[in-house]
Length: 195
Image: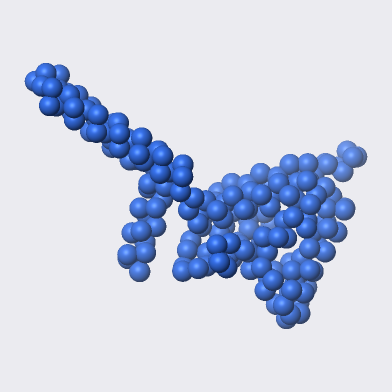
């Protein structure tokens, strides 16, 4: 358990938000520069290159590696774009066949794939009545346990009705993800309004 938490911390530190690594390397660079300024040694001058090279390596690795957390956030953002465009079918490609949702009537008892189809129908009906003009996502939190993850995310949707009744709604989503092969899929969703 502690090992997994430690590895998650390292992944986040080096691959997702390496700001602290850059700050540490900058401080090391300043210390080496101070020593060089004091001694004017060519050997110390060569050491000044090391933090710069390490920062470049961290930057390259951070850009090349896509972590599971980044995949899940990216998929969630793609789903929001699909819903904004009114393309429920595209959004549903990221939903598992064994999907369960609290907003689908009898979603946990109607059987495999039926809840997914029902959720798609609910999404299409909702978009037919109120098309969102803009969807923003914030406050991402993703916790992993093996090949599953739980994400909480806040969405704010702006709806344009064509009349003077434009409105916004804010939802706090809890999305349960499962990894199948190399693909992350949502297999359960629930939301609370107004948070």
